[in-house]
Amino acid sequence: MLDTALWISLILFVAAILLNVYRLAVGPSLPDRILALDTMYVNSIGLIVLFCIWLNSKTYFEAALLIAMLGFISTVAVSKYLLRGDIIE
Amino acid sequence: MIGFYTVMEAVIAFFLVAGGTFALIGSLGLARLQDFYMRLHGPSKTTTLGVGCSLIGSMIYFSLTNHTLSLQELLITIFLFVTAPVSAHMLAKCALHQKLPHHDRTQGHPEEFDEELEDPDTGTPSSTPAP
Image (tube, rainbow over all chains, first blue to last red; front, side, top):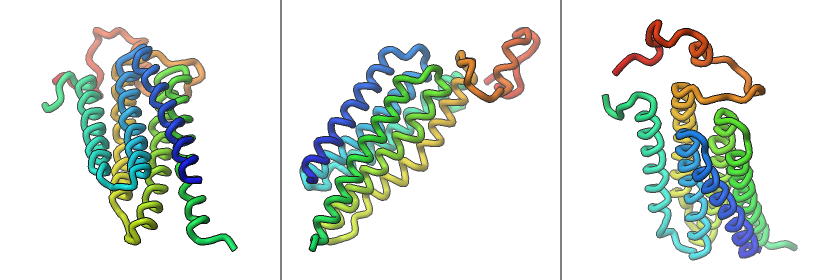
């Protein structure tokens, strides 16, 4: 049962990442693309968690934590740059 | 009599499938909705909930297989739930600053929308001082 649930959830997350890639390529404005990149970070954390359950090891949770921190920092930095024209005033 | 591990396996499977479904719904909202202010709702709420469901499922799984309480997933979950509203707020401020076009059915009239009716040379708006 857990194997089937892993496969279903994997397919759903990959479809979500493909929709984000569509919005990243099409997106009419710059905040749309930033939002699509931020959503791709969050969905890749979900993929890493599924990979950890599949491998039955907790090795990659540090990678998930790093992706969460770097995704947040980069989103805030790029939107601050668009908002003010400068990151650190 | 259904065993304890079978019930917990069903709970983990439910959390994983619910997490994937919520993530897909959020990304579908990102791809399908009409203007940026509508598109901001999907990833900032639904995708965060989906990844939170997956992390709770994995927390139950590793707590049962290792016979210890595993708290790394709880750290990632709390970090995601704290940072998602902050980044959504920054993106909304950025979109209002750039005066992105909005759909007719988008409700609310922030003051940034009214300033485009005025003459842009009469002065800089007070909310965005010059650096």
